[in-house]
Length: 383
Ligand SMILES: C[S@@+](CC[C@H](N)C(=O)[O-])C[C@H]1O[C@@H](n2cnc3c(N)ncnc32)[C@H](O)[C@@H]1O
Image 1 (spheres, rainbow, N blue to C red):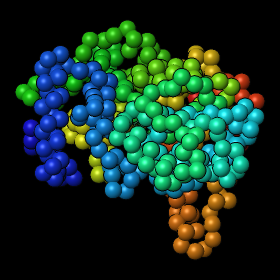
Image 2 (cartoon, protein in one colour; image 1 turned 120 degrees about the vertical axis):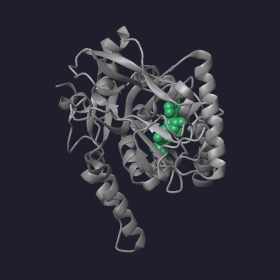
Image 3 (cartoon, rainbow, N blue to C red; image 1 turned 30 degrees about the vertical axis):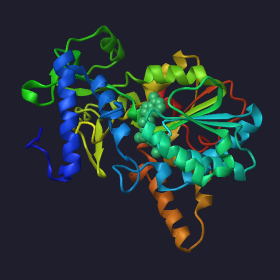
């Protein structure tokens, strides 16, 4: 249904308008039949529903899509990761699982780089919820690294195997979250309802689970934010599939005191449509990406509860510099200039260098991690 309050940047092509009308009708019917959705249910539907979800239906990535991720900017992240992985694969042997691999660029570049280092993994699992992205990933592997294709398996869910390395770039931010508002000093879940045929938040009843999740915080009335409720199941699966080795997750976010900072009183939700970022997930259902920043303290606490060790936490900039990204800068020719531009974007604090963080969660890892050599901020997470 057309929304008169839609901003100018969200002007749609006729095809997009048709898809949106279909999506809006589908979500309204869902709410009519079952009542208001929790925000987590809504986010799950808007991103992953097979018929209407954003990742199921749209070409999300790249300059021509809605957003760009580090692997799409250049192969530098992959080359740094390969330098981290090579001694681990050498010592512990080798299977890598990449969760939320998107269009497969990171996997292709990592395999290429590990091949050059003479340390290819015995198996590279690519786990991706979206069938559309899995197809794109298969094509990427076939065209970019056909020599390693027989070691790659692309699957929708965690395979029945054990990994030495589990890696995910920008997957935590895509996990459905619980949205809440503090009212009468209690966290109340915000549900997605459809009064008069429009998607709107309504306040639901407080739950014990949400109270417990936020028990260590004293947030003022009116404060709205998200709780990373999808992280537990995700980390539980990751921990279950990790042998001796490391889980490394890269994403934007903060330690808990910064995540729930008084100034961040509207939360951290961020939506992307045609390279435009905005905070309203209720517009353009199924047509835009919806993400939440990551509460890395919560990730560390859950991981430790699952028996893992917090093996490192730092900024993306410090991680890449520790792994020698500067040495990949190249010469003064056009490719060298492009490489330097990408390195700046990945490492400078006002670009992706500081907002993006890297967390390492380990089990009996016998090899020291190099990516936290220059700066390890583990204490900030748990202090
Ligand atoms: C923001 S994209 C990042 C893609 C890629 N890692 C990159 O950096 O370009 C997040 C991807 O994670 C996938 N995803 C989200 N949750 C997942 C899960 N639990 N298991 C597998 N894939 C998941 C989404 O379908 C999407 O393709």
